[in-house]
Length: 553
Image (cartoon, rainbow, N blue to C red; front, side, top):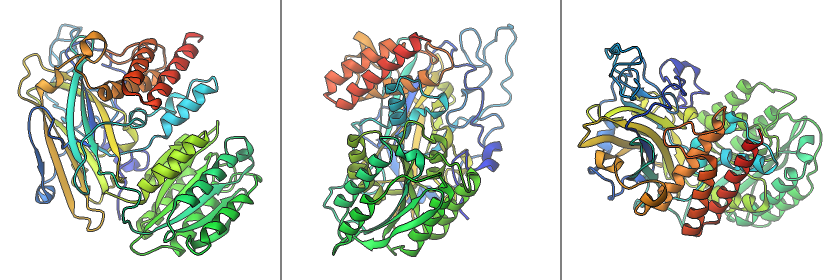
């Protein structure tokens, strides 16, 4: 039996992955810190500072990581380091009492998480802010804000990942930002791929009658029908108070495409939301129509607001997990609606080895079903995980921003029975670390490793990159000192700091070196002009809306 990597879906691991440490404590400590961005493309690129990379299936099979120390923090938790920060923020130095701090319990200097390419959190926050409300802090996931924007990472030649890294200093007390990126090779639309068997599970409950819900979902399905291939198959299941199969698994060639479009056209909103019944029927259809050697996936379109039948998340999650293990059927969740069950949808897709997206416009629906869905039909890497090991001689403390729900115990990094992320072609993954260097730091600061399984043979592979101290002390991140800093690195910082500001209970910077919302908006506007990227213009507008709402609180 495979084990899931997500903290929410593996309660037994809560005692092994200390991801819920004191997040706020130490966040404002002054001193020499560095923010490290880890992305799936960057770990392999030749432009990384401070070392080479390795790529070896044999290395992937050799000894696992040592057991985590008792006070190790997982992804997204509190700062990890030696001692308690004193007035100068120096680990292992006298604290406010003037007494030396106990450093006998040395924390684990590794951070491990499953890769994630979800973007729903940012899209939903943008929709919420546009309606004049601040998003609930619990719906804001830093990694999904960052991963919503294009990056410029080098691509590998075949399956698996490339890795690269660069960095910049912030304006606060020696803080810097290091970007480490992971990327997969893109695939041309006409390239050969295995046939897909997709079961669309569509919510037709009363809550979906609101404009921008069922009407948008129907347009999205018609778009998908037009862009899937003739050798692909599709089924359609709907659910309200009960679930029913509207179209069994049907090849799209020879009139099948028209049958799918006709089935979608006749749908109307009905009564309650029996999400459990919809998921159950959807997986039954997917299992019955499963194609050997193909990509078998359930695509759930819903506001995820279950209110009848099996509303218990545990039973619905178990159904998803059971079908993934037994039949290899994965889940792609697409959220809609101004009131949206973000937490449940994310937990469902984590259990189903899948991804989430959120759509609130026809443009977004087209992007998801014409661009993202095809990328999720093909798999470049299975069970992908990343682990960053920091050098104790150079690093005093560190913290990963985001990935709270994707934490993996450090000792499970090379345990291939523990799930990672399923990554398709053309994806990039970015993560940020806050890192504080020791005053006399030199040489290597960290080593970043990505591990994945071949999509066909399941053979494990790894690639690693050493990160030098000099990568953390380069040009500035903001303002006039940022002349030599890559714009996409600065964009990743803006997105991450924006997410962190929305997660804070009170207005104002919550991370060392974090600009105000007003300054972040100005940075985003400058980046929009510099890159010519319309998505960055939208980010600037979104930040300005948040700033306006915060100022009226």
